[in-house]
Amino acid sequence: MKRQLIFFFIGFFCLSSCGLFKKTTTKSYEASRSQIMFTSNRDANYEVYIMNDDSTGVKNLTNNPATDYGQNWSPDGKYILFYSSRTENEEIWRMNSDGTNLINLTNAPSNERGASYSPSGRSIVFTSNRDNKTSDLYLMNADGSNIKRLTFDKGYCESPTWTLDGKQIVFTFFVEDDVNNKKASGELFIINANGSNRKRLTHKEGYDSGAAISPDGKNIAFYGKSESGNTDLFIMNIDGTGIVNITNDKLEDYSPAWSQDGKWLAYTSGNSANYDVWKINIDTKQKMRLTNQVKRDETPYYKPVKK
Image (tube, rainbow, N blue to C red):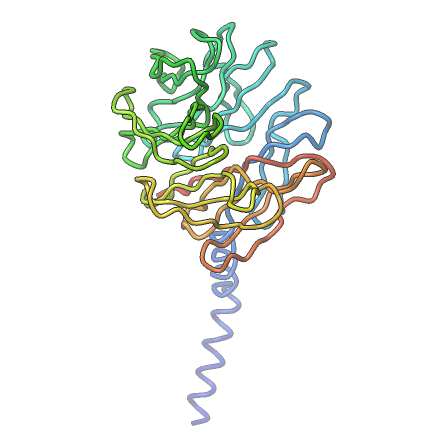
């Protein structure tokens, strides 16, 4: 028995001195910490920031006197799309995930927003008023070439995002709804990536927008008006059925973003006095506040995890 104990302590000392226990613990901690890109005007104008989802490591990536607003990550996490007023009008720009190597992708006299990478990373959908007084959906290659118009409407389009297979796009379209004397509102629609076969997904009162597709491709998170009149986060099936209120509080909640494991939604929450970035556990409804600034911190996006 004594001999066994001696061997045990010798083995434990060797493992500890070699740093094996320490390395395993550090690696586990780093693997559990995700990064979030968000937009803030804490420095007097809108800039693109990045932070860990435990609120640490906050960094300003753009640091420019123009308006810079974060839009989306590339699927491999190497690039960030944002729109900027650096050229006086709003353009879609791309930068490395550390804020370097900025490239203007649209370079047009019109205003472009709502940029989102396709799952393959080869295409970008965005909104523009280049051919319309309102805003339509457009498609371009990842380098800004081969721009194609997808929608031809008098109504306003915003917040496009791709389905997991890259075959369809979910977006918000401003419609005039005469049913039950409802006022005009934003509703979620889905179309094929070539602009065909449009289908309406939501028929709720109020403005529904900010669609985000779950990592398994089965659900859509979005924000909209609740039965109590508040702006809350909702989750529904990809076909628009089974709508569930996730946040259900008195604050204004919008711009949901899925964590890569599908367990959390990062989102914007607050009121006219102040907005911050929060996250909520989808199963337990546990809410955690990630920023605490006197101005606006909003529109978070989780960084994709390399597969």
